[in-house]
Image (cartoon, rainbow, N blue to C red; front, side, top):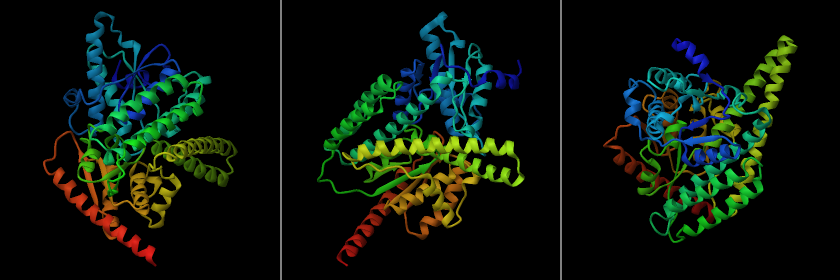
Length: 451
């Protein structure tokens, strides 16, 4: 079987029934909760250890690939080698499905699973492992992976698990810079993650969201007690960038903790924001196609594009409903930062003709998201991305002069697995500027109050 034939027959949408699904770990909290949700639906899933097999990933790549491609490949090969050693002769590669999503547009992410497929085929004993994939082009439709009667229920529960993962992350970032004792916040975060994973595993399939959110409220309420109220507020740092690098603590060398160590409080762009963006972007694309079909009087295309528009519109409406519901309940107990609305991010781009969602990629989200942070009183912006990432390079080229003009501190943080000896000096300088920005902002606020 040739390599291209293998891409057709062993990469695609395969049923998860009676298979062991191998899940890469990107945003740890969200992935743990998602595996709990999958188990709730009767799917055997293993969340693979991450960053343990980086050398394996580099061994089978040239170095020209995007850094997350090397990490995810290394995680997969490391996990399979461990499984082979653990099971011995009982190891059956055809019983495994490796999950790797993809996206369209000018981003190398869309090619990860193709390269992974070719490498698996080249290795003895792993060629029979198939790769299950979903794509942003159809808003991550799950047809072919799950039984038809499970599709809508799983999408709803999976989205809730992603948002709760974002909330737990933001709970950690809100409490850790102000914790009464070092290490308390991180210990409690792990405890809270275990609790919510059990909730998703028990109640996810039955969509008992009220019960799940009651537990989440109790978890967040307890987290409030970790904060030392005598510690003054710290400069707010907004993080944007490529979704994997900014969400994966090991590959960005725990950048958020480094920013906290030098006096900051950081908020990272969420995973739910990307999911909302995909639904919004597909809805807008369907709307454009609908208008073109109307002008051509193409009734067949008109019906199809209207159906696509309505489907994505319905999905986005549901997502915002759940997002608002979850954050509203959590914010009663802990003032974490919420998500940006995607249409507001797009307005930030359109106001100054900076960029367009029509270009695709995460650059639009990062540029607009950074400007939304600035609008809401943040004191600095960090753009995190893999070395040579094209969308993030575009983002940097646009954001640097804009933020310089409005005097908001900004740094790029690119990673390729090596350690940058000057990174800490860059962060220290950046945080010094952010403190100055915070003091200036607070002074202006006090003056405004007097008047």
